[in-house]
Image (cartoon, rainbow, N blue to C red; front, top):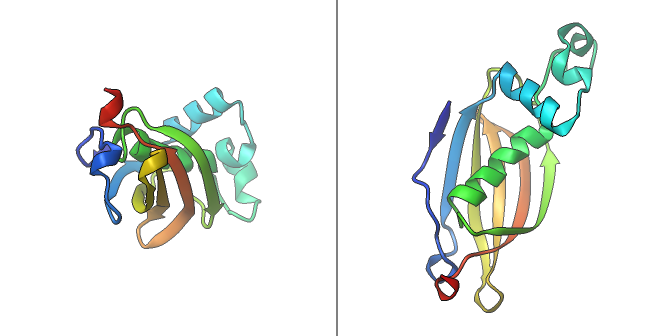
Amino acid sequence: MLDNQPRGTIVIEDIEIGMRRSLAKVVTDRDIELFAEVSTDHNPVHLDDAYARDTIFEGRIAHGMLTAGLISAVIGEQLPGHGTVYLGQTMRFLAPVRPGDRVEATVEVTAIDHSRRRVTLDCAARVGDTVVLKGEALVLAPSRKFD
C-alpha cells in the first residue's frame, strides 16, 4: 500500500529551502522476497523466521536498502522528481523494519546550489515515532532550461 503525496517534477528554479515530500508504504513479505530476488541478497535474517529469531533482531527484518529505496522513490517521483540524478547518499540504519511495518520516508531541502543545479536533502524513514533510517542526499535537479 502506497500513501503518496502528489507526484511530479519540481525544477531547480522552483525549489526552496524547507520543501518537504514523503510517502508511506507497508512493507510486506512479498516486498522482502522480491527485493531478495532482485538484489540477490538472500540473508536468512530477511527470509527465514527460525534463523531470524536467534539473531539480535529476534525476528525477520526487511533489507535496509529496501527502506532506502523508499527515500529514492520520494526523490525520483516527488522532490525534485522525474529527471533528477542522484549524486550521493549517506545513510545510517537506526532500527529494524519488520514485515507489516508502515514506513514513512521523508525528504526535506536543506541547501540549494542554483548555479550547479545541486540540491541537498535531509532524508529520514520512520516506523511510527521511531526513526529507522537517517541520512543526506545530494542530487542534480532538473531545470526548465533543459526542457
